[in-house]
Length: 470
Image (cartoon, rainbow, N blue to C red; front, side, top):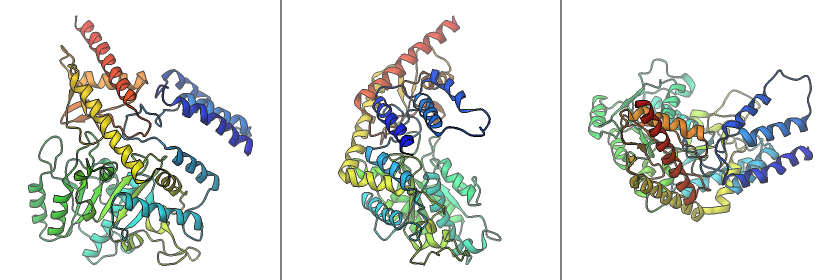
């Protein structure tokens, strides 16, 4: 065992040291993936297997923990979080309950308390550590479903949704696919959301939402507020949606996958003003908190609702939600759970409020640096204000008629090139790039490299387009 772990330790140092300068994706190394296949062996050699995984993985794996990965919204892994994640694998705790692991339970209790303190939320709120923002939305909207059923006199955890009307869900056009997936898994359907948007970008139309709520004639409903839209980092007006929720007696859920971290800086805290008036909040830890996958969290104002919605009665050998031997598996969707609280605990303990605030503010500066590079380049066009950590822009080279096709090809060329990584999206009907800056390793030099590569590939592709046209 120690020899196998020694192999991993020996590979870790060179790999981590290479992240600052290596390509995010080495396309030539992808041929190594063929070494992973073949029939299941009758027997094997563990040392050879670990050596093969390390050799192939360190060459062909996407360096998403590095400073030049701007695709999706993906953080890196702080040193404390990585060490704690190794510790979680070493100890292999089942964080089901106090009785399965008093240690894991206590670390989770502390980590949840610190997260609430970090975001300025009341200590009385309930919380659950889950695998992703999708599961955080699932947990939050599961509690909303239980609340909504209760308004109709039905315990949905006991009796399900049968014979109930469809649960009204309202949001802006910023509503994320993960919230729709959560509603899909909860039995409401991903198309159950009534979108109240005033433009093609998706900004909320409060007047339309008010009219929809009026039409319900007092029936309970759920409002989803989006804190940090994924294309440009925009925010719904959480406070105004909280006012509507209070006026009409709605459940207010805030999807703050990465935007919740705006709470950490005085420069951006106004973007999430009113979030403490929500009934539930979902966020990711493997984004801006920079802990390893898989890690998300949900907060619910009425903590009793978590146990009511996700308790697991009926097995004599398992504790129930009210049992002193119970634990956090009874307050979320997963039963058998690894101790994902350890990396969260470690990074919060090691770097504290100030360290995480400084990281967020440095990323705000880096996003403005990239925006300035875009604005200074005649062949680039910024499509949205930069409120947080995402810069949404496209290439607009002279003489190109079909800009959407050009930017699709630019996005594909960027990924194939591999020096930096960022994907395309569609913003207000235009194909665009939307790099997100949330990795603790990212520096000003990395931002300049990204801008330089984009300009280089734009120039190259525009020459190709001109050659074909002639």
